[in-house]
Image 1 (tube, rainbow, N blue to C red):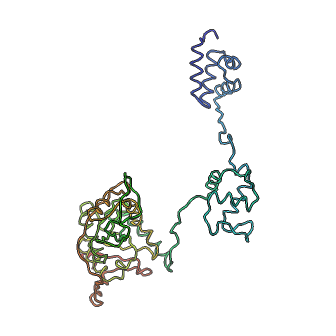
Image 2 (cartoon, rainbow, N blue to C red; image 1 turned 60 degrees about the horizontal axis):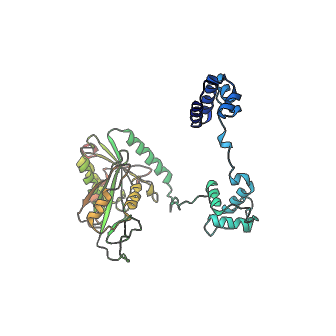
Length: 404
């Protein structure tokens, strides 16, 4: 003991206090061996360390076996663990139809379930007193732990389900996988977003500033409408948005697709097959004569095999491009889209998978109702290789040089 001075003792105690668990015990044990002859009682007297702790550290040092603390068993138990009946009563009240009593209906069947309302229901219907129950904030925490969290209403139920829905999804998965495995195949997702009304209209978003942005109190003075068309390279993540200033027609969709290919021709110089994921909308249906005519032209002009892979009706949200539209809306909904330049610039500053989209403007004028006469379409229809079981949802078009 005479080897240690008061300053040294203080330094050793300070060093030990900065360690925790097995590391602290190992340090205390080594100090005890080096300076105190391995005596735990002297370590307790000199450094104020617990004798049992030092002995455990010496044992760990000698055997090489380290004891781990059961930290999860320490501390105060959760309220619902201490009062099992409380959890059972909360679940009974929260469930729309109680499993314990099928005739009992939850008090929250036609009202919102809040922590305050749950606490009140526990008192009125389950016999708890105000003193027995924790604060409503704690009730809210318990509800979260039991899985009754605040959740958005999900649009997860399709309006309808056609007979071949499962077969169509199987085909989509099969064709997408085959495309992703081919080096000369590119899979893209295309779709149009709802038209954008240009004007000083509120879009329901928020933006940071000293003053709130002022919008018209009635959305009646629409200056112009723009049609956003998106092309997403599903694997590569590159998003292209082309804004039209006319109508959404088959010709508009085909022109956007051709403009996108012209801009990316060098990037995809090795591509020989273009697999297109799309929904079966009225303007791009596989039985829309003008659309199919234009798709054949795109295949011939670019020497590409075009494969149209449609998602089932009422399930268009599964089309990958749909996820981009939600991000775009969240991105610009706190501003006023009152002119074309503003729309283009705001769209260009959103991000999809860390990348900025490429934004173009297409100012051509399009007429609705353009169709191909039945006789003229017969030659075009011979170029369309339809699936026998799903003729409406899968079409393959070989370029003219390979179609014979």
